[in-house]
Length: 328
Ligand SMILES: Nc1ncnc2c1ncn2[C@@H]1O[C@H](COP(=O)(O)OP(=O)(O)OP(=O)(O)O)[C@@H](O)[C@H]1O
Image (spheres, rainbow, N blue to C red):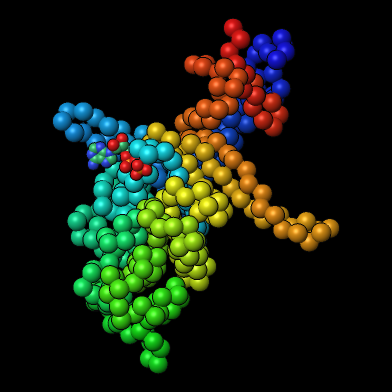
């Protein structure tokens, strides 16, 4: 640390010189597209407060999240951080206390009961951790997959000359051999793959999965994840998976971490091809989330390593911001 940090912005010239420049900036801000306008899922300062016996719990505390159409992404976070609360809201099963949440153009705060039912039947599909919660025990796998189609008043068959959609989906997910068996006659991993077929039956825009591999061993978990990947790649379904499973989190391009009811960090992975050796490797980088109010959560291990508490000193440079311990 040097002794030269007097001002908050030594490096970059941030002075606005003329009135016309100010006007230009204001106009550019006005013309900027709305937050999340091109995202399939857009959560903006989402708040969910639960009140039990007069005690308030802020499960979501101004959470921002954008998910683009066609993404396959993971949500991670400590127990109690708010993951399931967010999933229940996105599934249309719970309503936020404040903020905004839009999925495929539907406003999750203003939907009436009928719109909410349509939303759950047409826009989202979900797969839960408990295998038993996903399937009706007295129906076969094929009947379980056909049920959402019937509830929506669609015929069960595919187009003329094509197999029924239930068979198509069971084949796609590698569980065609389970079609005439009931859940108790197939393994837990097969049940989850059938559950994914059920969730996909109505061709939803978004598939939500809350700890779908939580009750399974690692080999089976890999098969389940492969089924999600197939759904994403073959059907183009946008998929959000809540997981504690680090191997699942490592498999996706984007993993968002939730801390204390807010998105805190994000890991992005991309494949790098070494032109000389022809070898492929995955490069991952961790980013901190900057919310629209400019709030940033610094990782605890960084702040603790430098003894940062309560306040820090900022310096704006040409292409980055420096964060220093408070040396005052
Ligand atoms: N229905 C509810 N009533 C009261 N408090 C709730 C309710 N649902 C969740 N909470 C509280 O909200 C906070 C977030 O819970 P949530 O279940 O979303 O966390 P989570 O990240 O999914 O945890 P886990 O990984 O253990 O499932 C917790 O403090 C929890 O106790």
